[in-house]
Image 1 (cartoon, rainbow, N blue to C red):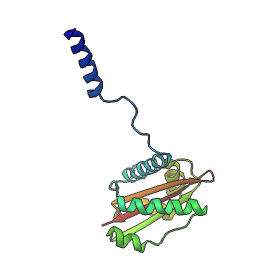
Image 2 (image 1 turned 90 degrees about the vertical axis):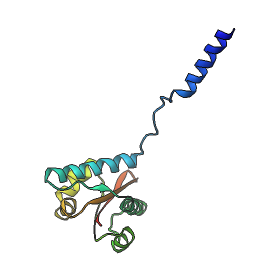
Image 3 (image 1 turned 60 degrees about the vertical axis):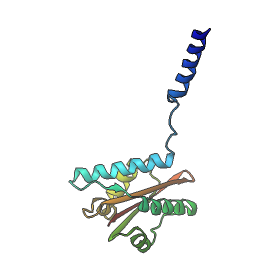
Image 4 (image 1 turned 180 degrees about the horizontal axis):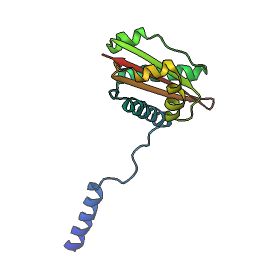
Length: 150
């Protein structure tokens, strides 16, 4: 009887100690889109010997807010960059916006890199920080990319 009880107890303890094999919470579509755009932006910079941009929480908050505003209004427009400079403690800031690209990679490669002004922001050697926000509305992605330097 003691052997059966000990075995049952060991199985019970094992069940408690072994971590669950259930998959971790999947990234949202917005996160996947933004992560792909972030990686693609750094790939473009790396190809041209530019420093890799680091994610910045403050810039990401502004980018997400902008993407949400554009999606809600179903139009693209730039936000006032002055508050970003002040609230994020930056010495310089820039922004790219877009609508209609189906993936984060395509917005960088097919959109921004083929536009002189947007490309200049992506390749600006003085930028060190970036935040990206993406929201889908009416079947289209609205994207904001904010760059900065402390």
